[in-house]
Image 1: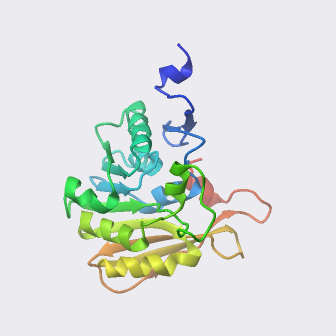
Image 2: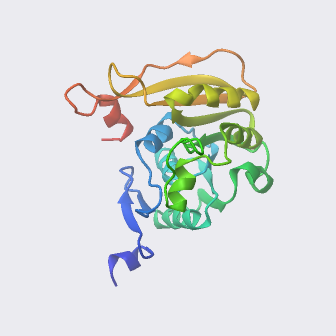
Length: 249
């Protein structure tokens, strides 16, 4: 029996290392794969003991798996629109023996509250598609196109989905391109989620940020807390101490 059969891999799939507590993830080269932004968001969300979280647009499940790995006393419901990608995520959950705490649902995040229940979660996370539909050359791969380009899924849709699922006082955490940060913050505010923490992410010090990490609180008050910038590489090209902390090296 070859290794692919052993791990339940389908043709074209591969097994990657999440570099956290020995966790593995099933991915496919022709579909969207997790990147640094997913790792940063899982760390930024800082899930708490006993927390019930929902990962909106979970893809192959990297953020849900990482959060469960970081915090062994929490549960995660992971929501993914594409049934085949959701199946990969579910098999990764089974592979890592996390089925008791991580559940994958093939659902449209905009309707997820109907299945999962409104106001039942204390944490919602999302690494949404970054590209505006029509604003960039869209991938020929349907899986990559849906993951990278928002299509008819707007920042408002993402924020409203989180707002429906969160209880009052629940947190919504997201990673988003820095030039579009205002769009997401405005959408959060419209959905009753007050932006509370923000951290800019820089490839190297002195350059404009590529991403922002945002946290909002449902029915939260005024006041935005700016965290120190997150710099990933030193001037000599090596990774920073903060990068090593986030990757648990």
